Length: 527
Image 1 (tube, rainbow, N blue to C red):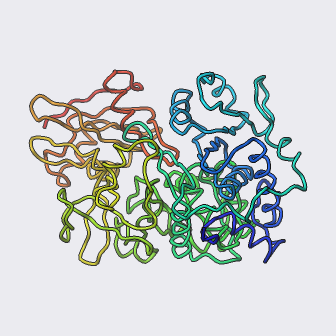
Image 2: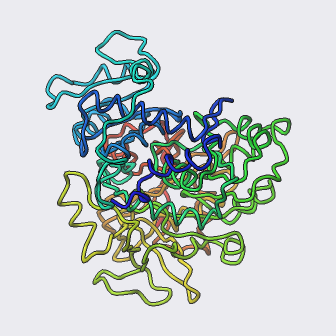
Image 3: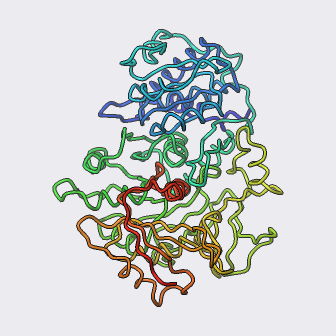
């Protein structure tokens, strides 16, 4: 293997070159690169002691903590496949993920023990070993990760070489999609992909050895693990890790540790802007603030900038990580644009026949190169549907302007046809979101006897604001063709969201179909 493509090798090299450099700051404690390397060795010894070998899966369901990173690195060194799992999953969702990935070991937080106890574990072959962090507060056949690993103090992993002799194309991580369009799929991500994602993030963030990267996004997601943590380790910089997001603690640590790089989703920046004045602080140390995710408007970007966050924008997905990027000047000069393709990838917009689209023409974003996933784990049908002729089809619709900048239109699966016309819900949402009384909105297509499909606008009003359907519909006048106007407005108190704040429209459609949605008021409008 090319050892320099293995993230565990990076930690080993930094432990030799700068052993006392701080790798991680967590809840006031510092872990140097030498200490991190030693902890990874101990975790590796423990995994080997359990009989775990290259190619077997190790599933981890933890909130952000140093042990998450230790296990990620230990699996990288051993050649085991790391499977990060969303700790917010309900028992049936967790059962699907574990059944699909078939891990030999499952490490989870004590706060998830009640959920784990609901699983049917007797029928799993091979038997799945269980460990908790910290020691589990309920009875069960659970190992205590910290005490188990500590027993290997002073020992080194048993290797014929310094690192597992894997090829760069071999699986590194199986990361499950957020499931916004149905059952989650396990994207198989290679060591080579991790390496080239780090190179892209290095360019985007302008990373330096002395950087301090604050991570508030969950490590089980690509944003936290591959866009922040892994590139920081590659550069030998420092991670300031938060267990979860808290606006006050974010401001405190930016000031205390002189944080220079940061990535958040729109909900994170909204919370930072809304924080009480006594909690906000001057943040001159921040050199790069990045944002990714949905529901971004020009007004929001201006609001964030006025609050001191001059933002760079990224767009990507689990299967590719960063795909498009826009620097601060691009955001200002090309409002609404997602920017241009990352350096280490080929990105195009193609029509249904797979041919490149003309300027301004709407098509699907496809990508080719070292940043794309290998396959969907144990799902050859979906793999064949997604990767065609060497190109990964993202399912995202976009157009490109004459300068090569991409503009997101919608998810291909969210688009519906009404009276023979294509309707892109994201386009309608952008218009309706401008209404000052709208907190959040999702437009879905539903069957209609006359038009085939029509749009329903599902709306969460802002707290304390009065919002009527007819007032919202007037926002469409002069902004959207009549066939794009929603036929009904349904008022919701909350939406089901993914970890990064994306609305799970599949769940909303299911709720509506079963008439089990949160309380809402139907308002019929004329077409």
